[in-house]
Structure formats: C-alpha cells, structure tokens
Amino acid sequence: MMGVVSVHWSSRSTQKINPLTLNNVHKNFHLNLQSQVDAMTAKSLDAEINKFLPLLGIEEKKSLLGVIKSFVHLKKEETNHISIEQYNREIDEALAQVKAGNYVTQEELEKEMEQW
Image (tube, rainbow, N blue to C red; front, side, top):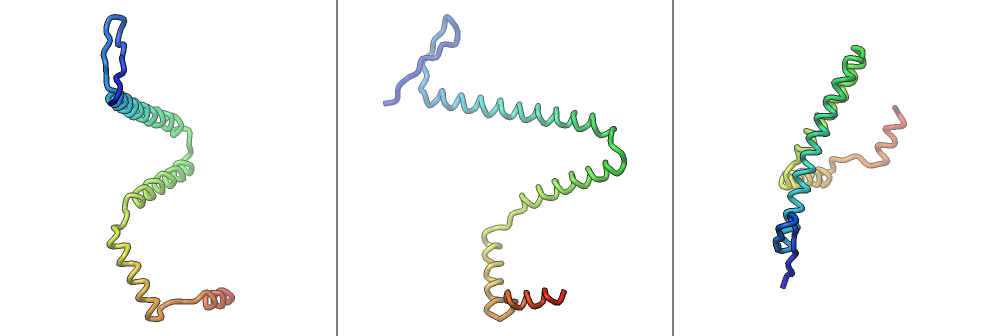
C-alpha cells in the first residue's frame, strides 16, 4: 500500500495527498514553468537580435539572412522523415541494382580519381 504525504499549504491547513498525485503535480508545474521560461527566452533573444540588426552593414545582413535560411532549411529536413515503408523500398531498390551489376567498386573509383 502506498503511503500518504501531508502537505502544509499554510499555517492553518494541512492536506493528505498520495505521493503519486504530488509527483504529477510537481511534473506539471515544472513543465509549465519550463515552457514559460522558454517563451521568455525566445522573446528576449528576439529583442537582443533586433537591437543588433541596425548595426550591421548590408553585406553582413545578407550573410546573416543566408545563415538563418540554412537553419530553417535544415529544420525542415529534420521534420521530413521518410516512412519505414519508403526506407525499405529504397533499400530493396539499391539491392536490386547491386544484383544487376549496377555499381562501381572501390578500385574503379580510385582509378577514376587518379584521372582528375
């Protein structure tokens, strides 16, 4: 049998709570607090970035824009995972190409590289 924890909410009230319930309350509080901190951090980062943007020249802004676009592109790639079915199809296709002799050996590649 699970024990009971006494929680003192104030000097006048005490409530008995199952430790599992108390643990869930603590987890929910922590998650909520973390999301608030993340939101505050995002807002403060946006404000910090906006303070520095006017100080940059046109070439620096173009460069920064390129970096931002590459981050967004990478993020999109991370979320565009293929399904296990697609993965298996691609593996099957690759194996079929090897069986059909459609491949290049390491030695052939090294010889080709020597001619570069």
